Amino acid sequence: LSAPFIVAGITQAQAASSKLGDLTSFRNVVADSKALLDKGDLAGAKARLKDLETSWDEAEAGLKPRAAADWHTLDKAIDRALTAVRATSPDLAAGKSALDEVVATIDRLGGKP
Image: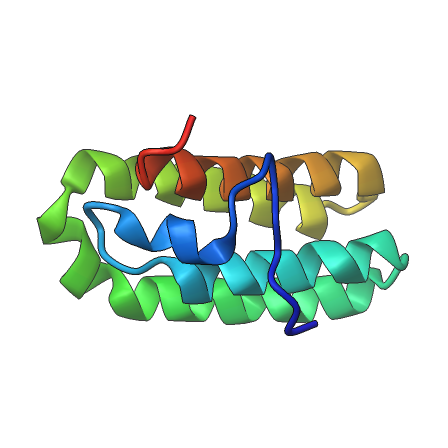
């Protein structure tokens, strides 16, 4: 799962230009999670999203002061993805959509349309 993840023609390297700093590692975890969901591996996707949740929470003190509004926007997108994948009766399509939203948010914060 180390191949570059491309959504809407935007590579992971382009996501690095956010006011929040380099978001590539977060984007990569989301890409890994989506790849797991695409394979139908819900348990694997949940575990990988736990990695995202942990690393995002650990990075909060360093990221949030850089651009609080952007941090909150991305935090909410991450929360929606976590909720969708962790639902009691998860809908894989909703989980994939929520993960796509996180990637799109990262890309938008990086100045990409």
